Every structure is written in C-alpha cells, then in structure tokens.
Length: 309
Image (cartoon, rainbow, N blue to C red):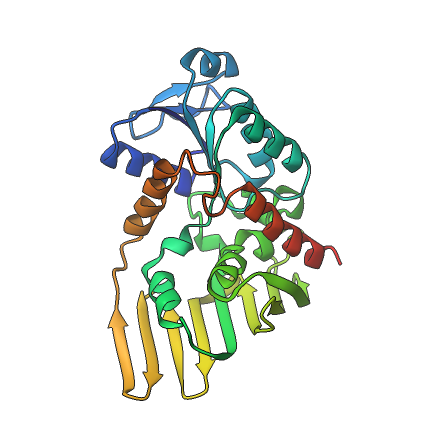
C-alpha cells in the first residue's frame, strides 16, 4: 500500500514512525515548503499534487493544522485515497458534506483519529460500567499549552488562533468524543468558555461545561490549557461506589461491594496509537467504521453550536 502523510508535527511524525516500524507500506511525506529541513525518518518527500497524482497513493494520513484538514482531504478523496484524519475533523462545517459525497462516490473510507477510544483506561472503563447505573460523571483535562510544542514559539502554533481551529473546545475535543463513547450521544452542552490568560491570541483557554446525554446522564467537563497541573481524569459515581480513570498515569481505581481495587495499565502511548492505525487498515472496506465522517461531523456540530451560541 502507498501512503502519503500530510503534516510532520508531533503527532504526524509519531504516526509516520509507527507506520515505518510496524508495516510494510510505501510512505511519502508531502511538504508545502521545499526549503523545509528534510524529515529525520528518511521518508521520501514530495512537494506537488502532480507528484501525488503520479504516485497514486492508496491512503492519506492528514495531520496538518486543523483548518487545512477538509481542503486536503477533499483533494485526496478525489484522487481515490482512503482518509485517516487527525482530530478534530475541522474548525468549521465548510465542505464537509462535499467531502462526504466524494467519499461515497469513490467508495473511500474516512476515519477521524480520536485515538483515546483505544487508550487502555478508556477500554477498561467501558467494560467496567456495563450494566451499572451511573449517577454522575466528572471529567477534567488540563495542561499547559506552551509545553505542547516546545520547539515552536507560542504564537507560531495554530492552537493560539480561533480561526485556525485552536482553543480548548477543538484542541481537547477528545474529551467530548470519549464522553459519547462511554455514556451515549451528546444531547445538550451548556456552560462557559473564555480567555483569561495570554497563552493564546484569541482562542478560548478554558471551558466549564455541563453535558447532557440522550440517556439523561449529566457530565461535568472542565478543559483548560493554561494549567501547570497536567491532569486527565474521569470520575464516575454509582449508588454504591465510584470509578476513577487516570489517563496520564494509566491507572484505574474503583470502589464496589468488595472494597477499593486498583489497576495499573500500560502507559505506552505508542501501543494504543498503533492499535488505532491497525483498526483503520482492518476496516478499509467497512462503511460502519467508528469515528467515520458522519460521527465526526455530528460531534463537531455539537461543539460548534455551543461555542458559537
């Protein structure tokens, strides 16, 4: 299989290395600037769409800035490539329906990479909450944006700009996705967002929201990337106990009738990212692949309706 990769930032480079180390595919990297420093992985670089047309890739891994996702995906789909798009799908709804139409016509699979569905903590929690009555859930995701890409100047990254898809609602939209995955479709989002620090130009740096699912479960969600406390936790309350998932430490703690139990899971990020890539390859003929274009669009609609309200 021939694969072209768009974007060699931190996640794009990680995907590229996983592809190199674990699969026997022919890889190419699209570079928009011929003066870019050659990639450290030794992957062949291409610079024009004419080169892409000549190569005829089978799939595209799209990990460039959010505001370029749909534009890039459209060109790739029109050339007959399956699509692996980094989350979020986009920063607005422009041309998403057009992309869906092209994918249907060309019979191309589109997967949006909400990788935390493959995180061992999320997978284990999914099993542990089966057939349990949940009273309430709290989710926290906090970090410090300048630490994300230390090799770049702060205002050089798209995360600082709302019009480029930056801000906690889209940058940290993993939380919205796994909330749906664990607890059901999001019906309503209420709350507050704002910019209280100076680590972004105009994008929101925090959000405190209350999510209601179709099953009438309420989830408190706090997001921020101005905190020096790196935290990603889920706390679920039941009638006779609780369940805590720590996605950073890859630990689970739960209280039930037998007392408190603790589980240490693998903290190797590459393991669940590799599982995600393998899932994509295994489902290239499956129109019901998870995180497909329809699912990702519906999630984006919910987030943008709240953001723009």
